[in-house]
Length: 640
Image 1 (spheres, rainbow, N blue to C red):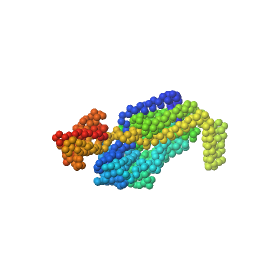
Image 2 (image 1 turned 30 degrees about the vertical axis):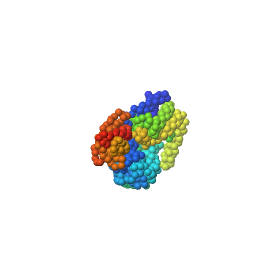
Image 3 (image 1 turned 120 degrees about the horizontal axis):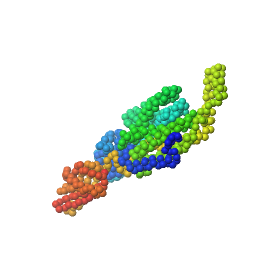
Image 4 (image 1 turned 135 degrees about the vertical axis):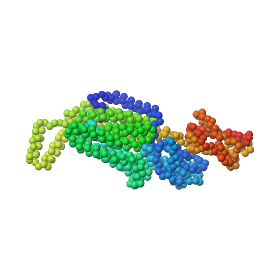
């Protein structure tokens, strides 16, 4: 019975209309903040630019290929491969060079000299700062495009059978965390008598086993998942060592250590705590277990926050604690719901007070989920188009819809809770039966051997449990509550699956940026070298020729500019005067004059040419071939 307030106290969802109003308010807050978002964070690194650009045709072979990303990435020896038209390596096969400056994340590989004309393929792979592998490929041509025998990678990073098993382990880990934390919290906060109930013990222990096994699988498969894609590399010691040196590897190891502490917590909860009869001692132990268990649960939740979406982008110092709160609230709500379902179906002893206490816990969890969810959505989506046009945004809409369904079903559960009584939960034996039972007990002690007495005691306990179950199942209020909670649990399973999918899905804003080819807010505009050819004719003797211009790196900020002038015979030629000017007409910027220096015959250069803004710039070139023969030509080029 989820997100409901106690029946006897104030409640924000006392009626269906109130529940609908609450949901509409939360949805309006979420979507309003999405539209008003100011620079939300990116997660999952996206390729924001390359030099040369995808599909570019350059006149001369570049000395290196560089790639720019929207966020910090981890690269290895073969993270960037450049293949010639025949499929042979065109790069020097050295480790990519880190060319990052400030917030610009850029890596490059050097190319062999004297590369022939044709189409070249660049295949790349990297690990995002949020631990997810990303990959891609693009082509550029030298001189002119050509046929190529290179087959582009058909499998994305993190795909294939290894990716499937890794994703299953990821889902299992979240499910185990929910059962472990939510089940323990349910026993300590809502139903202390559940510590002695075998079904509750099994639920929590199975949650611990699932989380531990899934964490071990993820640790072993981390190297194959991000690199080779082969199961046989799971026990590669060198690969495992490289994983331990990464943030995700450290998070998984930390989780295993914390699960060791969680095992001790479970042993005390279902051993020492369950066996205590003195109420004062039990109260003190409850406080100690709550504090210790809270610390361990927070630590386990932090292993996700420190290695996934919350750990990268803006406001990480806020996002990570918010993510921890979100995970703990999910566990308290959905794990408690699973515990309540088990208690209602498998134990005859849970009373209405425990159900109402969980009602209050669930309501508080929903409030925390709403607040933290609004903040997380603001960071990861940021616009209407990303909300409706990306997989992340569509999953987020589905998650909100599932929460709406869950709240609606919870309203019916609250109705059944209000009718619930304890009269049918633990029936007392009739005085005659008690006397008869006592007499039988005395006779058993006197006439029957201890083994037979123990057998009779087990039979009597089983008979009592059967009576309780029969009376419990005949209670219409309790039966209605069980059906309602079962429906909630079914929706909660789907909701948990969608939530897990969100953690491994590229956030909407980054996906939209990559699709539009625009850089993220965390990196400056990244373009590529500009190569122009501009024929001219001044009208005088030897007045015909061609101006060749290269602008590198071809992005906002400082650029180097080179100019060559070829005569009509194709050879370099000198001219008395050469001037350039850049104008961004769409923003009414310029003309910005550029006076290059002559380096050699037919070759001029200007360094530190400042391009203040990305856009379609008009480049005016004035060429004077004699005292009276001069012409100004222009051509547009996209810079940045």
